[in-house]
Image (cartoon, rainbow, N blue to C red; front, side):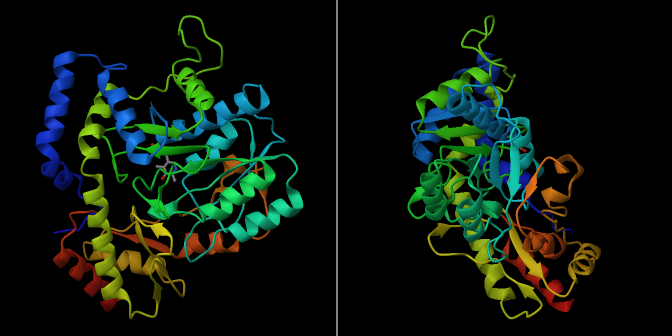
Length: 378
Ligand SMILES: *Cc1c(COP(=O)(O)O)cnc(C)c1O
């Protein structure tokens, strides 16, 4: 039988009683918009993450857009940033990270990754800011694959240059930097409940975490058309609410998240132990000070053999994925709308070399052994 990237059916079976009960409660009360589960989830996540406020939104992408729009309103007193306003981020991420910066009116500055963690290289961020800080308003670090960026360094630079930090935590719910949960360190933290994420719903959903009351209030307005009263609005808004039904499902799943993240870490450990002697690949590095939640288990395939290996595995019933095949600065949408700082060679090499192997909390040891055996055959 083929091995998928992740097995959502198994996860559902494990939590079926809780999830079904949550859905049934919604069927009973029929309060589909801003039902009680939305604020229950907001409270539960803010106590889990450790921030004063959490605001449910319609997706991880909207969490980023709303954070940035609220920051434009708060810091500039205008609806959008100006094109001259620069926001630093990584080109090795999902499109939505950079797209949110464009949608908020600003210009993304792409800075290369550290190839050992796949996260933005803070040495280059420092170098850029020390020479080009004019008009830089913020940083959007992405905790890729479930591992934290170097948050001490990022917060230090943000302090020094008076920048906001919007954490993209879409892939790292439950991950930590030292003893702090990711999403609680920056000005805001943006989560996604897309079904395949570590904490996924049965459709789209997202959340913003923040300690800043004004930002929280602005986001609450923006997500409901731009005003406290939707029939008399203040700002250019969106319809970006989190559905009651999604909130109820995610709330039911929240109590399993630590167990599931531990399950992912166990799978990663077995991969690490069994793949460690293969010279042709580089295993994911777990850096100190981080609690990696392995949204993906991603290897680096040397010698230009990635595509060949992927095909070999596919022909033998093993699914794999390439996250991501195109760096943001090579996409048409960012053409002439971004700033490229220095060489982005590590990102450009990564898109050709990375391969994510199946990982989920229920991946069994014998499936992992099968994957590893076929990989070694290759
Ligand atoms: C999934 C993801 C998003 C977007 O989240 P959606 O809920 O799909 O809108 C943003 N950034 C990263 C890094 C992601 O992986």
